[in-house]
Image (cartoon, rainbow, N blue to C red):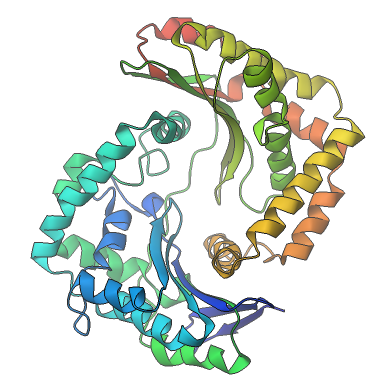
Length: 426
């Protein structure tokens, strides 16, 4: 049974025991990400994530930090999203003190040396180049740009080469000084810990304080007509992302939208995987997913197809979108997909790091919504999945799959926007 504890400094701890495991994960998550940035400091959340691993007073170098965890076979990493940033250490259950000591040290005592900041600019620019050269990754960034335009929600999490090169120590300290506020952070502890271990967190994290936290700008989620983002690139394959606006995180229909994404392209037996790959031979990768943010959301299908057959692939995707609005999903298909979602989640949550992330992500996103939702146990989540009906699927499909909500991003050797714009009809 998970337990939520609030420390005197307003920092919340979520402790979720996991029977039968010999590992433990400590995840610290902050309610900040690229949506909390502006055009001048775009990418600073991600840059700061890198800098936390560059040395503290106690552990003055990257090597001193990594070798201490490598010595015990620990796993450690960090990630930056649009609405949260996380740092975790996963170790044997008996190594909890070490995990807490290292995590608290980097988050509270990092030096942010000017020479390390300059050096890291090159590293992050190469990371950006890697993304730009990988259409499977970059297509999602282009799709979100199509949805949200030149706003924090529409900009790449990593920033641009220009903003990366302009990062300096003052910007980083100013940003950390507002966004890493104790009341907007979570420490998630999961795995094979003892009840007494929870008290250790206060010892290591009591020096976090409440700060002058800056909220993100609300996303404009209105759309009156279809939108296109065409990115010219000489490629041997066209990469496309075709989708619609859906629902915010925790909304009553979020799970229904998730199930629709699985029906359409979330498995190897899904409708679009079968149609595009198995029957037509048009694609190797086909995937549909639903992405909810705190104040918006979207569902999109991504695929890599022959350059000469992009139009055919788009028509097939749109036809499946239309079909799900016109004919109720069968009981057999719906039950199969619901059980798939429950089974996938169960398998994923067998590990302490996934369980820690499960609770931390919910807690952080609800904090951003001013505690607008209930933090679900896996069992409560499964109950909500089981309650979704074919009528719910039909109702939501009719609401989201309409012409004015269509958005298309394409990477390939194309220059004629009008040709693609004409296809965006349901």
